[in-house]
Amino acid sequence: MVPPKLREVQRCPNHPDRVSVGICEDCGKGFCGDCLTVMMISGSSEGTGPRAIRYLCPDCLRKRKRGEAASPFFILLPLLALTAWFFLLSKSIVLLIVMIVYSFFAAIASSSSKSAYEGLPTFNMVMKKMLELRRRVEVIKAKMSEEEVERLYSTLKREALVTDPYTGRYMYREDIDNTIKKYMRSGLTRREAVIQLAIEKGIPLRPGLHIPPTIYDAFSELKREIKKETAKAVRTRSHGEEYERLIDKYSRIYGRSRSALEHKIEEYMMGGLSREEAIRILAEEEGVT
Image (cartoon, rainbow, N blue to C red):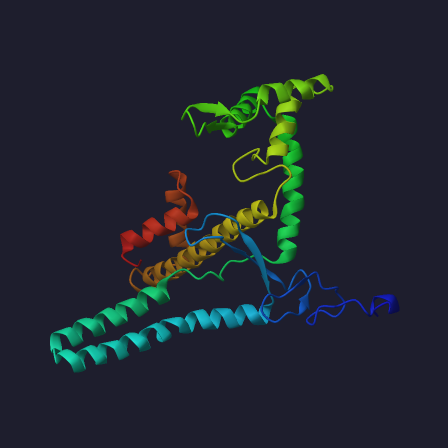
């Protein structure tokens, strides 16, 4: 039952018992954190510059994936039309063949490019990762060595270094040392002053980890984790297929049981290999890859 005072609050269409936390970019409806997929958009074609966050509901995400899958055909049709037009003008069979081959290769290249809508985290996954990163930052701050603090100080100095537009000489746009001394006079240690100044300047404590962590830090780490899990699943499926082919060969050709294959795998593992490595090497030796 939904409390009466919450009935006016926009709720998730897929989960009526949950309050919507964001709006889908495409359909404009509100959804809960498990339904909204988070997508990061680069600010430039090179993938650098300011970034924006977009949210997509499950239905709109599927529509975008279908549109992306159909895009090679929309590329192929104009190219084929252009090919026909060139042929009518030139009457050259060679040119016709070249243009047709080029059109098909262009469509194949477009279809094989990496999808922008695969391996995206949900809103709740990003928020959970943000909490994890905040806890990690506190641990890192407490355990930072003097060497790491000095590297942070060097980064602060480097970021403050600019070129004088009139003389061409290097100069500091800000006196970092003076700012650190000011913080130390307020009661901070030099270590605390350096970390505090890095926080204010938005300098990462570690590569990809700002203080406080940003949504981009969480998104990037989640993308890496999802990519790693996907690759692991593919490897596991591949090893499973290789294992089944080995079982088939051992029983069909050698007349030996699963236990004989397991014994062979254990021999390889005693030599320092993992089970996956042992299966892969055996599959290569037996010619069943």
